[in-house]
Length: 91
Ligand SMILES: [Zn+2]
Image (tube, rainbow, N blue to C red; front, side, top):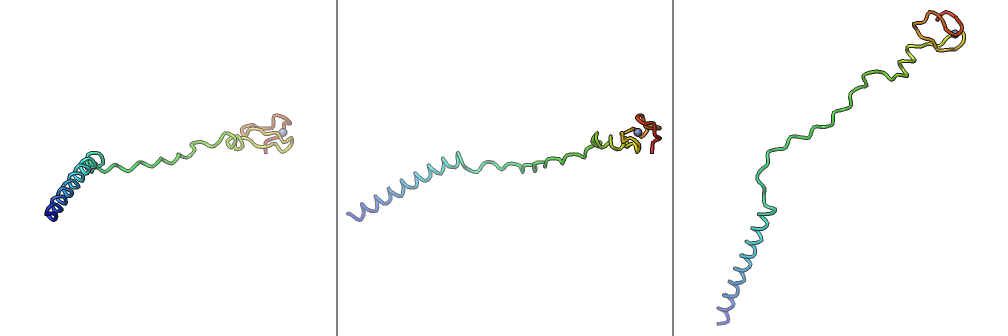
């Protein structure tokens, strides 16, 4: 009789374990389960590299547009015929 009782208890235990497992598995599938297959996300666009500076810095343009007078050292415009400070002709 004891052997039969053990078999019944074993069966009940297995049944309880199975029910518990199934319940937890159901909860797991509900919350963490495999979501519907998402379409492949497009690759994130890399940040575009900064475009090249369109114009030279003003200081450089100033250096290009002016030159130093050989007589007095003043910076005069390249468009000037002669130095506005000392009157020396533009080199
Ligand atoms: Zn000058």
